Length: 320
Ligand code: 5GP
Ligand code: MN
Image 1 (cartoon, rainbow, N blue to C red):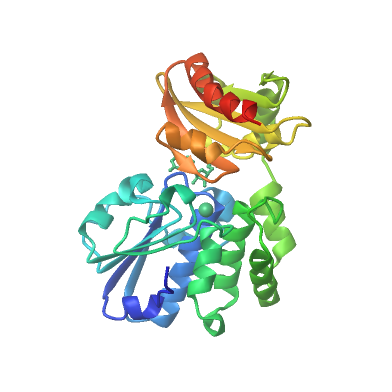
Image 2: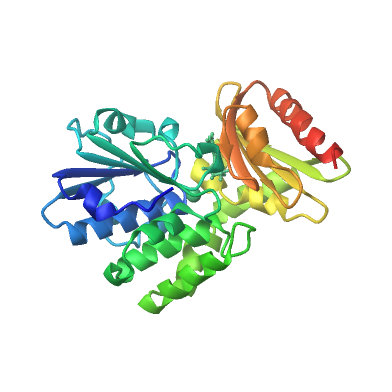
């Protein structure tokens, strides 16, 4: 895909909107805010808005975090609408702006969205994060501390602080260009990525305790139902990290974590270490993601869901 000139694409716009996927993670929030700062700085006479489902408070230290519109009450249309870190299917309340926008620009790194959904598409499946793709589209000399910090948040959240296999030399080169902007990166990593509240740790402990291993311990699954979430007083965002902890267990290649989002309906997160292509499994059930991290929504009982998933996971593991 050819390089897109972000500022030229926006030069005639008087209203621009930016959005990313529902249940926004660090990459979704970081990418949206980085682009928001960049466009506002370079196009001061243009109205720029960010629409996102309410992100976790761990990101609230970012500049102008309170500008994020999670009400989707705005009924106007936008000349340019940016879809970041997703296809148009997971825009939630912001989908209406996509439909009515003069021009749509999709910037992403999900292999399951390789065609892109915009009038203009920059989808790089080998990039660690959408923030990494965005960095490539920004002029380096125009970066500043807030943009750098937002991009850094996006990158570290999607590559597990440079641990996951999507970390490339390019990812590290970009990080090397960002940290001289002098934001407190050790603290940022600790507070937005690793730190968990007491209740988040408690429910993680519970999920680990009740996990079930199968396929000789090569797979593991755990489930949190609504009753359990109510008991601990947690929301879905508090469950982030559980699936990674399951994947960390010695001998496990594929970890599945699910939580109840409705009657007989589960949000499924999958991670793998080396062998299982979880994007393939998730795509089969209407979801998507990356080879080592993917998700989908599935209907049925816990046992229906895990039986359906394990069929596909086992097929991949047996082929080896
Ligand atoms: P998580 O398990 O952390 O929610 O998501 C892991 C990866 O899979 C992320 O890149 C996320 O965007 C993607 N993903 C999760 N759920 C879905 C889904 O239902 N549909 C699609 N297309 N991607 C998903
Ligand atoms: Mn991402």
